[in-house]
Length: 114
Image (tube, rainbow, N blue to C red; front, top):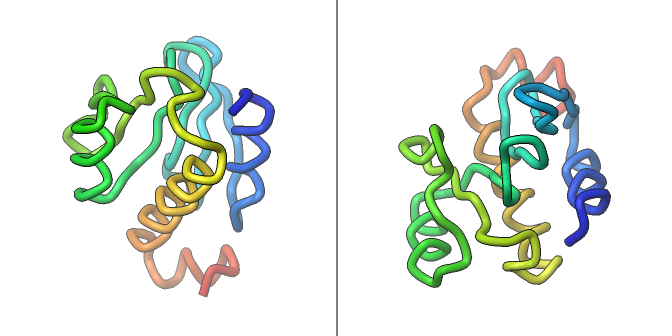
């Protein structure tokens, strides 16, 4: 998936926002909390995963533990084309949902996320 498509997929998610930080890295957030990264220091796309997805992506050699974020179950794809676009889109939606679930009820309501 090209970087512009990755950005578009992230920003299509409800209440998602982009901030450029850390050496030009595009940081995608919901409620002020990160769910995906691209560019800058991120050589491959990086995103939050569920425990099972984390183990599976690493075991299949599609991703590696993300630098600095691995203990929070983030992965870094070995290349931006490691996954078919439809699968990557699903993982981004899951990353977004995992972060939304950690927001307070008040924050979710303010963002229109239930």
